[in-house]
Image 1 (tube, rainbow, N blue to C red):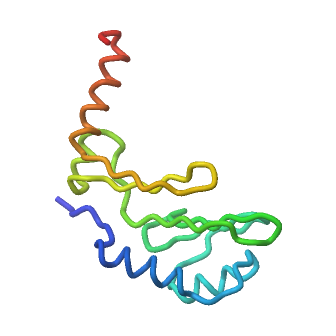
Image 2: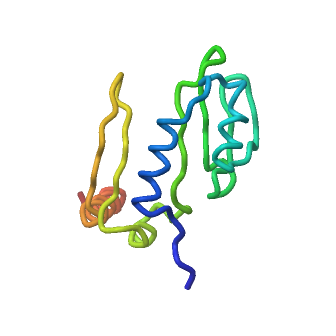
Length: 130
């Protein structure tokens, strides 16, 4: 059985630190400079976004912006797992999620037991049993 590929916690921290400290223009036209520095690949470029392969496959990275200015960078740090109870069992016992809410970012940590219970509740509701 193949192991689910992901960055380790320390690799994620290193990546975030490198991204935060990387000195570049934050202009969409300069995304290739960022891509070269991090050894990623550009897949598609549009006026307000760029799709990347950050090492986890097609569209694993996304740089988005407006009027030529970069507003955000999103990167996948794992391979895909199926979005069901079996797939989530491949990931660690907790799931960390950063969520943008209005003009702030919220860190959400959910236990996989909670996610399994939620999945079961959704199934029961779909069957009309809740």
